[in-house]
Image 1 (cartoon, rainbow, N blue to C red):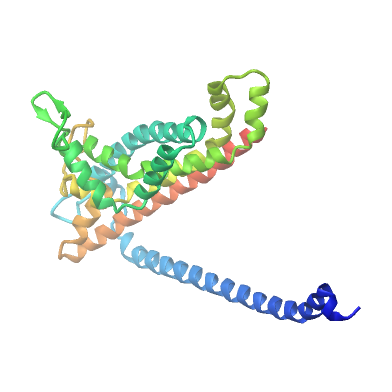
Image 2 (cartoon, rainbow, N blue to C red):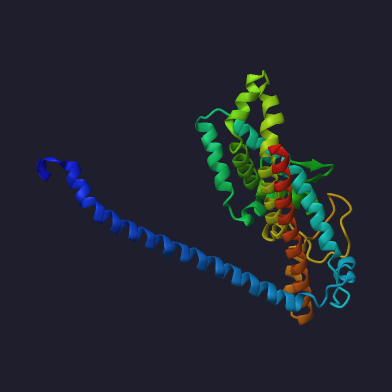
Length: 317
């Protein structure tokens, strides 16, 4: 039989050399892509090391007990970070309390209860889009909704004669809650999706209800991923400056907040205040504040890893 009448022989005869050529070219593209990714990673690591080294040179000159116990002052030698640290702790505590149940509840509803229709797709698309909205937009929304207590029409949030929470810890915390909610919801959804369907089927097979299956099997299995996403979202919120400035956080606070309706400042705001002053001593103070903020962020990320490992081991037993 001639090669013209045997297409398979023609394909096999012509394809061997072509395949070898294409395979070599694909290997070359793979190595080039690997080197490009390695170069990008090394550039990021180099910039981070350079930044940390620069901060280290200036940031440890004011690192002392007084830096953590004193309030800000016009004299750099006695200025401290206490008010900003306490304000940040108040804000992040309220953010964690409000964002976790709302974010996880929304993720559970979308993944376990909501029907797959156009409305669900629209909600999911909006959540994904909100995760990419600039933080200053959330600051504008928080200024109108929480500080002033109204969006211009409809009912207003009023406490006594005052509408809104004012420029308080509560306003800042609720604004940052809006900022990180899309991140928390998306992270929780991905964690819930990773739970094998066989676990749900086994639970239903022994007569468990929907809520029993979700609460006793799905949620514990997804908790490592949920907690990791939650802490990473809080790590983003703790370093945000634009929304806090927008809702009116104070730049000079010689006291610490005693309740959720008190005025406050935060660590990024205090660093911005110091770095904007012309004296070099305040720049060193700002570097010290950045060191504290970086240590806080690294600690939160480490806690996220430890929680993920611990909960992962518990759920695998």
